[in-house]
Length: 247
View 1 (cartoon, rainbow, N blue to C red):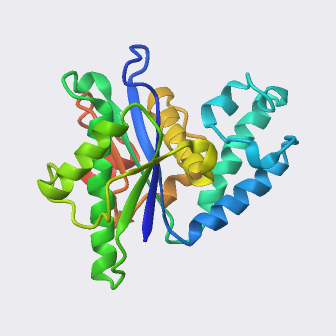
View 2 (spheres, rainbow, N blue to C red):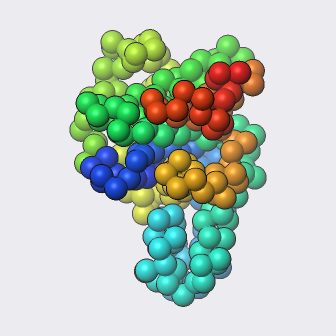
């Protein structure tokens, strides 16, 4: 089974932020153990009393307000975030990044989280369809960090399978989304970092984290399908998602 781990970055209700991002990583089920092992090794390098209890949360690392991150310099904290993202960058070829960045003011009457979730369910389903044509008949499961959106997103996923998204019926998901505590899953923590990297790219124009994993977004025939930029403010946006679709 292919597992799509997702987490969000930014807040739908924060008026000081332009974007909300939902993003993460798709891995084959057997690869989750490798990612967990690699992040456990990285946790040991930060001197925590119990490395297995150390959670990698990108915004917390960036702010350096909580231990052990408060003992890091600014450059060391940035390096820690990049080190987590490097686990994806050097992972198996079948590991794919997915993310949707929603410019909130472009869609004042829509819930940005629901928009992003619909986009990524569609993108993941199409990715699985391509694999199916190539002979990989495994289905997929979406796994998200626990949030206040749990009930709504589960209902949406059931609707996608029955009635479809704006782009068609979702056919390759095995079940409704699973919500888990990010502290219990290293792969959700990696998803958090992917979402944060995309958020920093669109919200602040800071691409140093995004660049680490840019090549891992799902793509086919020169089009980056795994990264979506939903906005109506710049018809000639030159970001990776927009420019490959126009081309």
